[in-house]
Image (spheres, one colour):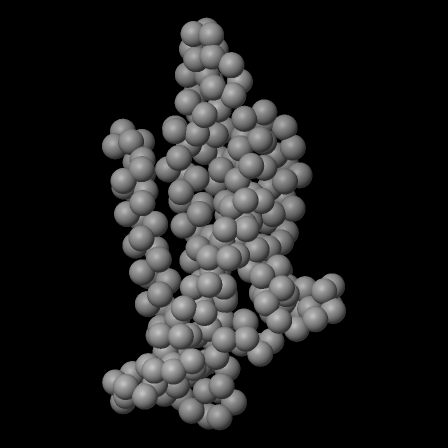
Length: 216
């Protein structure tokens, strides 16, 4: 594996390690962005109104319980194609539950007395959401996005199963060719990339969250 990693040839070209990392990041952030766009507004809505939480959270947890390979196969059947779209659907299905659950938990955990005080000051529902509930719930919201990122980046290897790129290419091709150094290299790079992204979101949390609200 060390020889594979230190060979300059394996890092260059359209199928080199750098190109595979870029592809893997593209799959990850495309799915993460769409997951945030879908889950965050729903989580804010149910967390603010306290309505529909049981249905939304349980549907999200049901999607999380499905195996990633099974989700990919269902997406392939639904879209009737092999390519980026089924992978995106499968990864988004895995990314939505942690964001949805954490956003709801962050807002629903705000002290009712704080909300009553804000309402007594004449704040509207929108102002309470944006100036009270979201800032207080931000640590948990970021935690949910962080969890979704780890889930997506580690599962994006399934893209290789439908003839796409990414770091999963090394795992799938290495297994097929019995090239274990290549396979282990792919697994190691995925793990390192997940740790790097986790550190980035941890840093974002430290920068954006008020010191009095930081958790962990």
